[in-house]
Amino acid sequence: MDQQILLEKIAFNVMQGRLEAEDEGFDEGLEGKPAVTELVKEAIRDGVDPKSIVLEALTGSMEVVGEKFESGEYLIPDMLASAECVGVAMDLLSPYLLKAGVETKGKFIISTVKGDLHDIGKNIVSIMLKGAGYEVIDLGADVPTDRIVGAVKEHQAPYLGLSALLTTTMRVMGDVIEKLKEEGVRESVKVLIGGAPTSKEFADQIGADAHCKDAFEATNILKTMAH
Image (cartoon, rainbow, N blue to C red; front, side):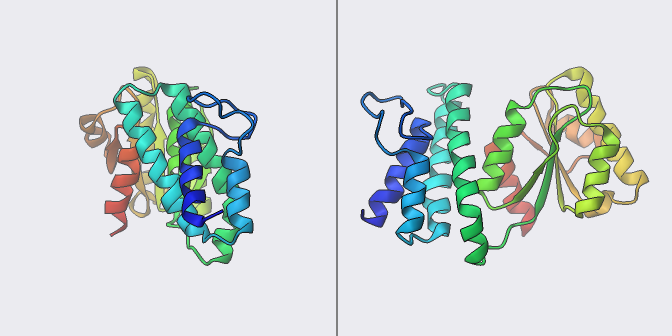
């Protein structure tokens, strides 16, 4: 199959949230047709440049999904289905990206803070950042402050993402930043926070480097931080 058509098909199926051939999409009549998994494997076999698969088929389609989500055309399950497609595609591609010498843009540790079990938003950010070329270390939800700070030190990660969806747990983000200072590593890591109750004002108040309203803003802010 022509490379361009293949890339367009991968992008189309990401937007349809179709991971495997038996999955249904938004549109009728897609069941049984190759989906993201099969198409990415075919692209790899055909020698399509793994970098162009990421940039043209995955990153671009997730930007469209983000726009559809923000306009209300897509709901959270739709967005998650597309994000899962990108996550699986990235897993299939990562050995080839390494071989092609595509360097990661740095380690990004992400977690939902102690006491908070919400992880949908965090998972979307995590997948988007993988798609954008970061090495994401996801610590999960309800993560104790000491463990977050320990991971930053262990991995010498330049970026830390903290998520909270409750007004009661968002205060813990401040504790994490205090702990980073105590351990002498605050200067070496950029802290990005996000989650429904958080705001730019709150980020300033606790001394975080940035507030991200969603996964798309997170990737954009990181672009500016890298320069």
